[in-house]
Amino acid sequence: MIDARDLAFMDMAYGLAEKALGCACPNPHVGAVVVREGRVVGHGHHERAGTAHAEAVALARAGRLARGATLYVTLEPCVHWGRTPPCLEAVLAAGLVRVVVSAADPNPGVRGRGIRGLRKAGIPVEVGARSERGRPLNEAYAKWIRTRRPFVTLKAALSLDGKMATRTFESAWISGPGTREYMHLVRAENDAVLIGAGTAARDDPRLGVRHPNWPDKKILRVVLDPELRLSPRARLFRDAAGPVLVIAGGRVSARKIRSLSERGAEVLVLGGRTRGFDLELVFAALGERGVTSVLIEGGGTVATSILERKLADKILLSLSPLLIGGREAVAFYAGRGAGRLAESLRLGRLSTVRIGEDVVMEGYV
Image (cartoon, rainbow, N blue to C red):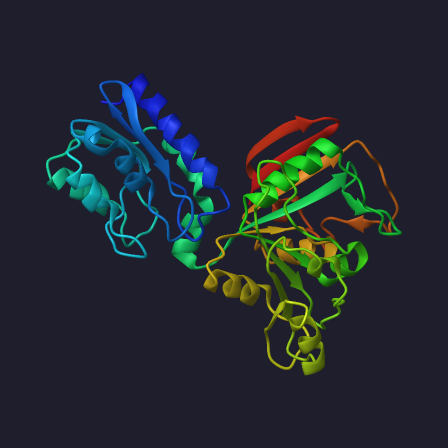
């Protein structure tokens, strides 16, 4: 039976799990708390791939005090070897009298096996405490483990009439300073950030994480550049904000590849003899690299391509009290558009927050 104290300790475990947002890929975000006689005697979270899992960290901190205690963990203990031993073995050896699990592992190959292993050993297990917090926390891991494709978030700053920039491509700054700081937090929580060649040429962004909570965050910076127009002098190459991956089409010269490679970029050529490439191939290539989440920050061309191909999982928009107007202004979603309302792309699970004068809206496709 799960009671109010169980929920409070599980909230603590989730708070620990959230500390590793954007750092644990391709593993899930997991937190654990060890409680004995109402007192926390151990806690931990999985910091990054290759390091000890949350249960192992929490039990190591608890030491001998784990015997006779209750373990609270946001995801069931793993049962397979990877770069670290199965957590189930450490949990079984700790002498616990009870385990409270928030959610089963989304991995279809291991789902429920950790819970069954605990019960088979005679340890009482309660499942489901605060499970609603686990779904968004590990939505990227859940998609990647099933499909080997990253979770795609399409983000844009818009005027009230849906424009990303004026007819002269001015877009700095549509959103206010508070919103921009929040979007850097969102960027930090993703494994990669992606833009198109047009945005790279016009804005010359660094695409790093500039947020006080993430002073050392390195993020994979991806540029879709079919013809390799990216300048070797671009600001992307002037700092160590993270590796740079340039994705080119099939018809690019070895000289252009060499000039970017010499600046530290990795150039990945996708497609055959054509200049362009299929965005499905782009996300498949990122997934093969263990990228579980990617934030799309491109212009109207990239945004429209993503939306027309229904490749976004989530859309994050900040709306500012501006009316830009004009047919030549950059629209967020251009293309042919829906002929009937029933054909429109509808978002669900909407949430909104007010930041200064802006309204930030998030919805799932």
